[in-house]
Image (cartoon, rainbow, N blue to C red; front, side, top):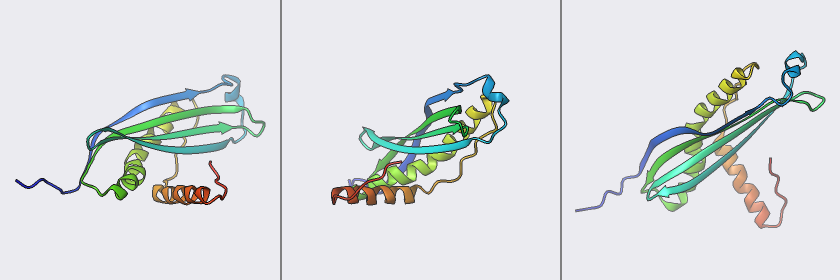
Length: 155
């Protein structure tokens, strides 16, 4: 009997792994009328869980500060998924985990961020779409430059 070598990619489970919300200057911060500076940071991690099963976590941190550096809020969401990924060439596994999986996770993380900020009493933060392929390529170029003795810039 021949072994099935067809590539397999399926979503086994999507879930919020961690959710944190801080409003350190409440209640006075709600009286402010200035527009905050919003900062968004993304991080993607992937790890094997079992044979052909991987957990990928997309962590989004959003902070909003006033010009005087007082924080309105900070929210961090780690949206995770368990993915079955089998029969994919070794060189293609990392791009699938760092591009394909975050593309699936992002809409759920964006909703969790918006919901948390709204429940905290602020206007919703609607995150713009993210080009995970571009981010992945930029990380690869930075890593390559670091290996060649160049500088690496981390956001």
